[in-house]
Length: 396
Image 1 (tube, rainbow, N blue to C red):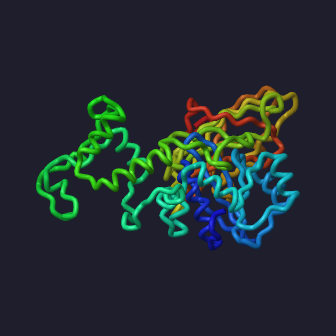
Image 2 (cartoon, helix red, strand yellow; image 1 turned 45 degrees about the vertical axis):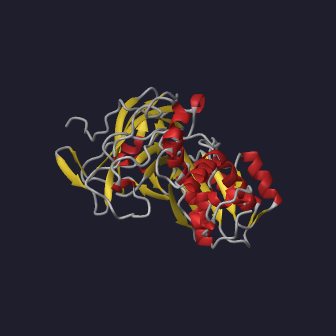
Image 3 (cartoon, helix red, strand yellow; image 1 turned 180 degrees about the horizontal axis):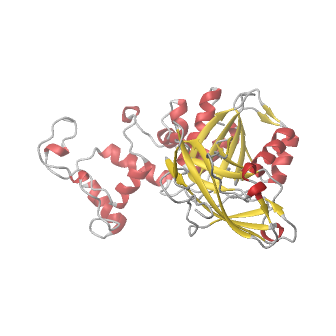
């Protein structure tokens, strides 16, 4: 079981775990002193951790079911509930039924061990992380070594011979001298070779090259022990990956800006309309000859959609029903004086195919944006790089 953490540190620890696993995370405190840690992966997958940070917290079945509703509405793929307290029996049952991962301090300890994430925990507990683990395995490591063990990534590079150790001139290799460096450059400052090892002989040659450098013997032994004890590759941590709920699409492309996804309200045969879309962020846009600037501290998100209505009855797909969700805060469309990209009342006749567009003003530092639809229309959003996100007006 991991040590008890201050509530704020526990939330930061969970966020750091996901950051380590490749998520881009943000944290939001809720009015009831629980938290949402939301995350986005480069491929577009979205995740959320519902955090009950105190040791007196008890997560109930109602909490889990409300969270599931939130995840479905927001298009969350990976859903996790974490607490330093306890889970009621009903909560565990509801989570099992809906594919929600539950993390308490005991489960988190297993997650850390399986994922080789001791160094992340050490940042919040003051421990030595990998060194503590090696000592637990009975390996005698002097306390004087301190924090001199390189990171797992560097260790792997050293073992495989990718990064040269020492080299350069004698001054650059000085061990205890520290500050004494001559005008020559160390081989560690040069680009790493493209081959798995400098001489192509693999691990053995890489280790031999490492062993011939003026590196303290104790540090070499510890480095190799860490590399082999922790492993070069670790399996996925419990609750830190895998799919859960459908929804969303890939990033919106276009100009530099936030990653953009869209949540369908229906899929496959259940959808009455296909909406192929693309988006871009911009500080200003021109429509019908007029240039509009984004408000201070915000950026425009221009979303272009090609709507194909395949139903037998008229469909209402209104601009006002669309919103841009940024970390749980929703932004309605940005009205532009005298111009709009949607038909009147958002009505689409059966068989109608039409290009529409809308604009949102979102925070300029938003890392990800999700387009959501609150209307009754059953649409399937499909990201399409072939759609050019521009603001055009019929007849202009």
